[in-house]
Length: 250
Figure 1 (spheres, one colour):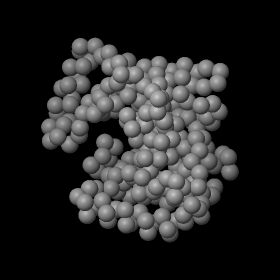
Figure 2 (cartoon, rainbow, N blue to C red):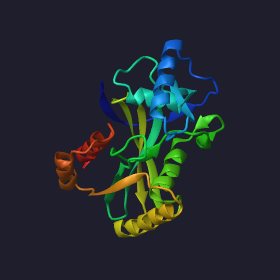
Figure 3 (tube, rainbow, N blue to C red):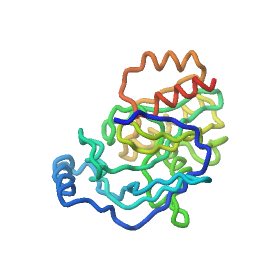
Figure 4 (cartoon, rainbow, N blue to C red):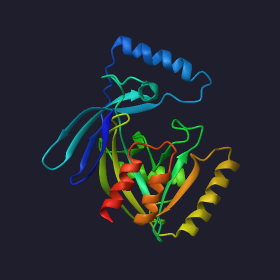
């Protein structure tokens, strides 16, 4: 596994969509099909589109990333497979570290029905066609949509600022993550009240919240350092490096 690297993002990321399908070898495609038949025997997942990184070029003024179309079976096989292969599904996604008006950081533990059960992570998710704007993906739009779907927070009324901060490379699956800082204009107590009502609405409609636990972490060096020393749950590869980056900047 390549080390996880968190770098300040000093230039825009331009993510171009293509309708061209990812070209997988016959043998690799068969592995994906065999895996999907087993993992989705109870029809838990849907085999939707997933956008696969075909090329990355760092230019003088921006990162130029081209994506082609694959599917969720390819993606899930890649992340569940013990051995990473050249044809593994490499994706780019956005994630947002949320902070309340009174300086509490918010992230969560994924629920058991999700693709990453019991994993700690920030809000965020895969790209979809909803995020396209003139042939390019709008990562900020993606992150703000996920914020609404996962925490019940709405843009622009609940948000003071959403700014891109870092890019994550390497890590568990060698995915690329563009990391945002989302500052709310509500306090922790106000957020908790809204989130409780949001979860009740989901449950009353037969839906299950994506997070099974929410972590509230005061944004000060002592609290963050103590959390990093004692948290033992599984976490997404960028989370601890991101929190350490906050410590270094405090």
